[in-house]
Image (cartoon, rainbow, N blue to C red; front, side, top):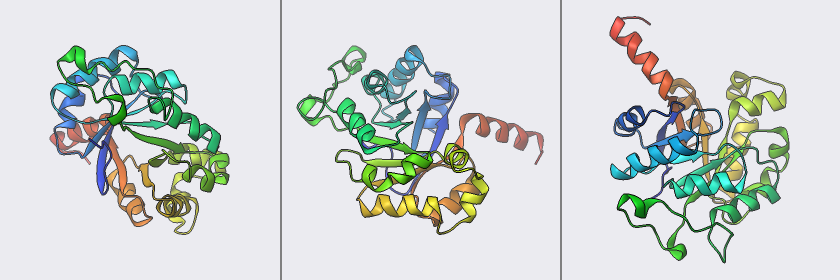
Length: 238
């Protein structure tokens, strides 16, 4: 099951509370991502949430803490259908993500899925095909964009707009306003290489602009943002 499909809207979970994650996963979003880089997810909470989501029959993605193969393997063992790997600046680093995410002979992932412990079947090694995403979030990654996009086995280029803006010495608003700039370049390179183009938006207005720039797999909100917006709506605030 593909976690991040075309034309989709996802929710980005920072909180590691299982009940909150399940409620959001069942609320109508196309996918849910668990953030192990800047969120509260650690080994235990990834496994706890993976078990709960598997029991509900819901596919999910994990943004790993970094490009470390152990973190990629943990996310996949916990049941993630997709990984979004940060800190990728070169094609060689992207190839290492593919190696970590595939079983031999295509890669070097160690066998250890947890699904059988939860009463579910794990896909056999030959059939295991998680969606492998690499983050484009630096000037170096942008300079190597074409080579990264062409790496076999990379399925998704996922933009971290805030880090990209920092690296380029600009702002997210400036990136969004530039219809022919870096964001459009990334979306076009993804399409040219036959790869999916994803991005973090954080709010529906940014998501609308990003879709117009060519991104069709967008994290439109965070769990904390949704909770805050819901509270304001109940209280009648802006």
